[in-house]
Length: 141
Image (cartoon, rainbow, N blue to C red):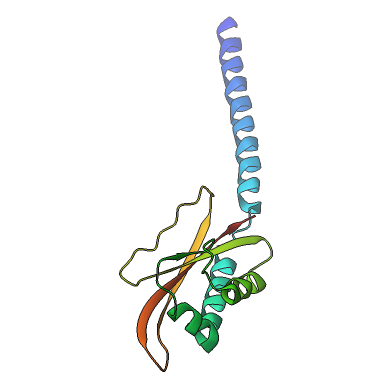
């Protein structure tokens, strides 16, 4: 009789651990599923901004007139470009841009968790051929 009680206690402990494990897995999976992935929305927004800049001749000219690299915080970064990016970006994002030569990697280091990066090449206008790379860096506020 004593031996049966020991086995019953072992089975009860096993079932209790199993129930607690299942409960915890359900809770953790719900939290994982509830997190929304904004990456596709952010990338679509970045592409839309870059295409608009690419098609605007005044913005193209302001990029092509610069001597790269030009950082977002530099005084010679075009204000019309800054305002276009700030106007078109999603409200929950902070964005910065950098203008570089094409053969340059054009990297930036940010201590943010999720950084979304897209770039476009601005090659020429009607007067000159001087290719530049405009890289857009965005992250959640």
